[in-house]
Length: 173
Ligand code: NI
Image (tube, rainbow, N blue to C red; front, side, top):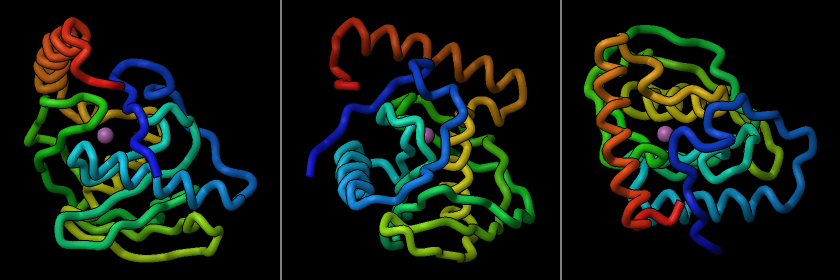
């Protein structure tokens, strides 16, 4: 297992749409393990392929009181409800907004890293994580979900954080 470098916004391929996996090989299990180790190393609750430089449709997640899972080629087939809540992103460390709107209930279809189909429902915070990670596969980051005023404020804050991170090379990504 290894901790992978995390790509910072707006570096490639974060703002691109990720491609589906057409073949599921044994290397996906290893990739999922490395992504989970990376997510835990950065104290995150989710991490998507583009965030580690892989423009493919895969993400890992673990809600605070739930189990770690990896979704390959996920589809959100149902979305219901809407609530604003707090989000951050490992690709924009130290920047948060508590006004990110998300559905409160979703139904998800995906493959696990071995290629087995999975189908489940998620509510509230788990549903929020999945929507955030799914957005990464579409090249969308959480500020894109905000109203224009909040979005500009978050992006301006991020500019300052990013400049500080680049200056100190503190972040490994
Ligand atoms: Ni993120």
